[in-house]
Image (cartoon, rainbow, N blue to C red; front, side):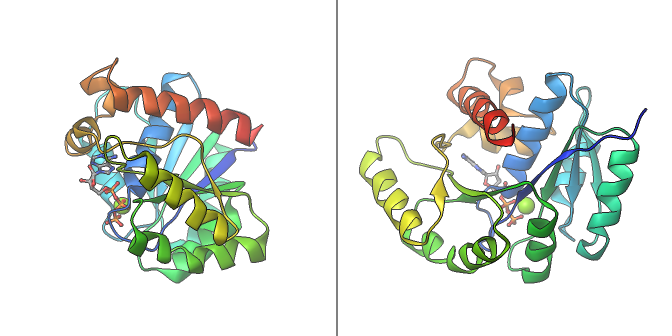
Amino acid sequence: MPQSNPKVIAIVSQKGGSGKTTLALHLATTAVQKAMTACVIDTDPQATAAAWGDWRGDFLPAVVTSPPARLARTIENAAREGVDLVVIDTPPHAEAAMREAVKAADIVLIPTRPRAFDLHALEGIADLVQFTGTPAHVVLNGVPARATKMVEEAKAAVADLGLDTCPVTFGERADFHRSSSKGEVASEIDANGKAAKEVKALWKWMKKALA
Ligand SMILES: Nc1ncnc2c1ncn2[C@@H]1O[C@H](COP(=O)(O)OP(=O)(O)OP(=O)(O)O)[C@@H](O)[C@H]1O
Ligand SMILES: [Mg+2]
């Protein structure tokens, strides 16, 4: 396999349970389903993404664990193996891991529940990406049904911090929840379900954003 120059997506957020691992695994698996070579680098000591990889059957993105301090080296190794896309999953409440991931990334995705406290926790990451100049987008996750006003307010709060909101949002969906505990992705639970459609839409947007 010839050396590649992989695109690198960092998934960060200081809040626990905001959907970092869910987003990382869905993006990497979609890439593999599209015949790309993708790899998830799990920098979370809890290794949730790596455990998901252990449960999984086919269309397996490689999931490797790496301490944040070795991230650059791990990405170099992935490039040597010809990987097209690297998705970095990070732990919550971990400044150093977040900084290393942002430093390595072409684009940063920040999954966030659309609630005031969660949005408030975006300040640190907003400062960081403004400092590094890395393109960064908040991805609203776990959006309740018919919550148009909530989404509008969240987008305004994100804009106040100088960040962009991804036009694709993820609803609160059982398919996301069920898939993560089974080593699957939403489209494998229900290929025509709303969760699968949201992932598809996010992938389409992501490809443009990375081009
Ligand atoms: N849109 C969603 N709808 C329903 N459940 C979701 C959604 N997104 C994530 N979840 C569920 O919420 C839980 C937390 O998600 P996830 O593990 O992706 O968050 P995380 O940010 O990686 O958490 P941590 O900070 O602990 O690493 C998981 O059980 C996951 O299945
Ligand atoms: Mg996680």
